[in-house]
Amino acid sequence: MPENPISSRNILVTKFKLNALLEITKAINDNPSREKLIDRYETLLREELGIGKIVLYRLAETWECMLCSGLNNTLASIDVCKDLLVFDDITFIRDLNPPLGIFDIVIPVKRDDKHIAVVLIGDIDEEGEGVSPVIKHLNFIQTLSNIIVVAIENMRLHQESIRQAAIKKELELASGLQNMLIPDPTKLPSGKSFSVSAFYHPHMDVGGDYYDFIDLGNHEYGFCICDVSGKGISAALIMSNFQANLRALFTIDIPIDELVFRLNERVNQSTMGERFLTLFVGKYNKKSRELLYVNAGHNPPLLYNRSSGVLSRLDSHCIGLGMLDTIPEIIPQKFTIDKGIKLLCYTDGLVEILQDDLVEAGTGTIEKFLINNEPICNNIDDIVKHHSILEGNQAIFDDITILGLEFR
Image 1: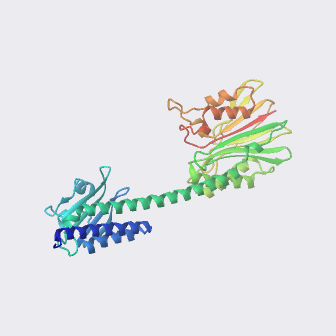
Image 2 (image 1 turned 45 degrees about the vertical axis):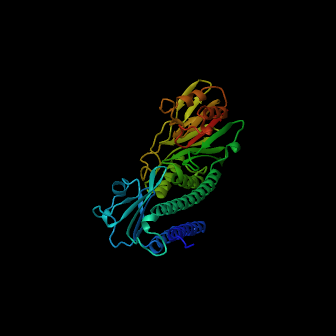
Image 3 (image 1 turned 120 degrees about the vertical axis):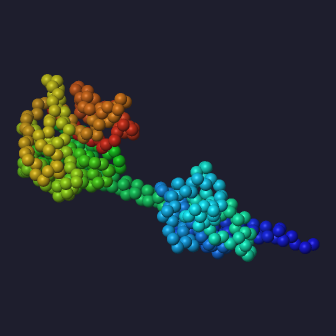
């Protein structure tokens, strides 16, 4: 019985398609570069199917031309959104005006009914030996293009996941290193004369807030809280640099106005005028009970006297560091600390928490939790719990740092 030529041709076509898909699948599994995958796709269409012109557009963040083969002129005049997304099905376009008219067929590639790629082919060899006419391969080309485009997108997502994992690891390392620069709240002093409590919570992995407490010797103690403008890695780097400078400069001998003056110089050197920071810095003598401080543009700390029930604010008397080359005037403030006084310092992230009515919290809540006979550590814990700071409160959009001192 003679062999049916149509049946034999169909077998050859099926075999060709299966071999082509198998080859592309193997190529994808070998984790090739994007360029090698596109080259294999081009070779298959040009050499195996005899297609003279091939253009492949892919939707990434915008539409990009991944392949332009067999064309001498550019495709700058083709607007994918305007000219090609109107085609929902495989369409013959050879009768259209240029630039589309130089092609024979447009093949849309869709996923979830949305275009993810568009293929233009022209100069097709409809009578190529060994395979059926290209016209009968259009659905196959569409499927093949889909596989290629999805594979390239998967490559991109894989590389992005690797990049994100590396960034996450670096941020975790940076966060750990930064935490080493921040005093451990559990190791802050607590004695008969005074006690110190603190809370530190960066909005991201790293932040621009900073606090410190330093034993200067001879009954003198230095402390500070500051906030670098901005957030994230750049703010954290400035904070780290500031911490190093503060620790190097803050000694028992340096006058506090001179300390602020020199810190301003260092901040200007490191930020080149691009960033600034606000600072509240104090020096306390345990023996004389004298507190000396400078508020350089920082949120006014709250001072509560349990005996009198009076709440006061330690306002700013000079601009923040890094705002000008030289701070015009630095006027330290000085007073004697009575027993039973609580001092609460904080960064602006605490007062900028949005409430249900989308109004910033302000100092009202802080004052409410401070004006009582509870120890300062309890006051800070109550503030943190009230605002659900450690529970991922979505109304928080900045670093939050609290430093409290209680004088006995």
